[in-house]
Image (cartoon, rainbow, N blue to C red):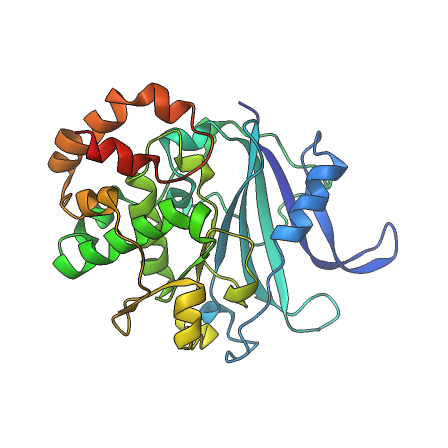
Length: 301
């Protein structure tokens, strides 16, 4: 399966004389429409609280956007310091346009910190190779998810989070995770694993957004560098999970969320959750969006 690549950063293009943020290189076959969509998704801004030169401390944004049944975007944006003109605030976005079906087996968040992500242009021609799925190795380990869920408190947090995800269509409350970047990735991974394989590609996310309230993703991360301080109304208008402070928004009861809170390891996952997905594969396949259908399936058990 063909996976197209796209590089975007601020630089001076000596062939055109243009300077500033622009595409640096890309695979052949990327359409103008896909380029326009990427530009709406990949923009990176520094948290106001960080020192601009301390790039190692700046949060990385791994973003996933479901476009349609045929293709999705997986975007890695990170701070790179100054541009060619010495201006701070530059970033490098390495984006992939991928067949959506690939994420049924490996949820996109599992490519967090994968070694194939680039933070600079390593080509001279401006043309990037087309990749295959065999060239992409996930880096996040499922054992990290099971470790996260050894805590009873974390299982309750996950249940609340799963409930918010399945109720998002009716509640219209986007989800904000307040935690360090690695924990944000793990929470998104835990949610992804607890969704049926055909629903996993539908879960959009960003591990970092400079303004979580303006995010266009279902789940948005707010690491400590953002100094994100939600108020009481924010906890009502959004679903906010803040394990750092032990705070979580209220949500409606969910039979599926309660069921998920009992899954603590791989054996229970394979014994209790996978059969549920397998027994209802047809109805889940015909549901083209994440919703509360899972509650019905649990109640019918």
